[in-house]
Image 1 (tube, rainbow, N blue to C red):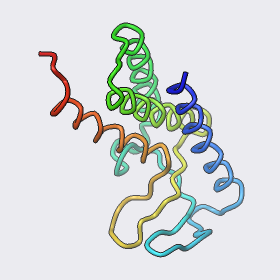
Image 2: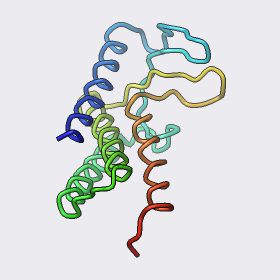
Image 3: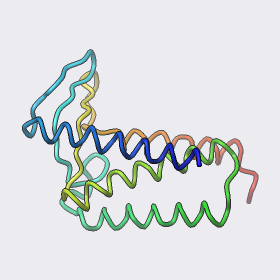
Image 4: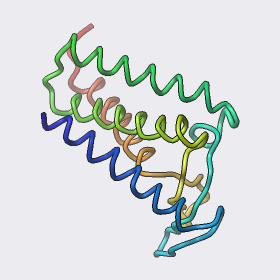
Length: 147
C-alpha cells in the first residue's frame, strides 16, 4: 500500500506542476530563476535528450508497455527488497507520468533547466526515472542474488 501511495504522490506532483507551468507560462518563458536552475515551459516531443523527437505515439506505447510489464513483474515476483521496490516504483511513476503527457497533450512538459551545466530541460517524472534506474543498477550489482 505504501508503494501505491508513493506512486500516486509522484504522478500527482508531476502532473500538477506541469499543469501549473503550462497554464501560466508562454512556451520558452522562464517563470522563476533560482541559483543554478530556471523554471521554464518547454514542450518535448521526444524522449531523454530529445531523442526520437516527434515519435510521440511510439514513445507513449513504449511507456505503457513498460508500466504493464512493471505491474506484471510486481504481481508475479512479489519483490520484497526495499531498494528494488523503490526502484520499480520510481521507474513506474516516471514512465506513467510522462505517458499521461504524451497521451493527453501530445508532448511532455519539461520545466527544470539546470543553468549551472549544459543539460536538457527535464521534469519530476524524469527525476524519478533517473533515480529509479540508478537504484536498480545498485540493486542488481550489490544485492541481486539470482542468476
